[in-house]
Image (cartoon, rainbow, N blue to C red; front, side, top):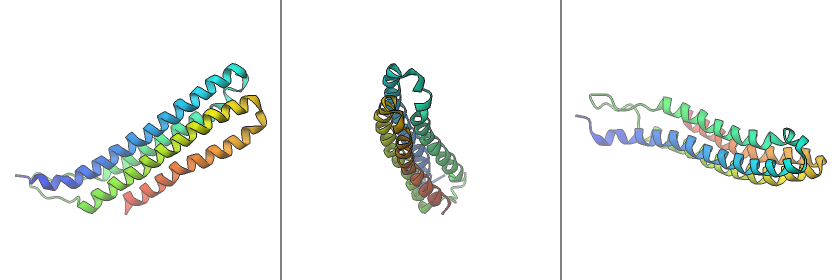
Length: 160
């Protein structure tokens, strides 16, 4: 009979995997929704600029991809106890994978929030003054970098 306690490290590994995807997609959804509202408002003023200003929505979607990458990597590294109760997945691996999932997930929420706010106001401003486009893109790149930092830390944690 398998000891219930031996499955606990795997629980933390699976929790890290699911939290990576859930939290990163929450950030991506917020960024997409908020920037999309700005694009809709800007499109009324300047319909020709809508496709040019779709970049914040694309950048918000990339955050979700970061979460998906980490979730797949983590879930493939988790091993559950065998039928005879032998556990090859230890507590250290479980906690590292939980930390990796939280790293990319919470970073994704922050980046999605930043992209959403900047995207909403930025595309409206670009609709009125097209010369602000380069500044908007630079700010969006720095906001996206927050999620990238979380991805890098998550990859390091998942392979350590």
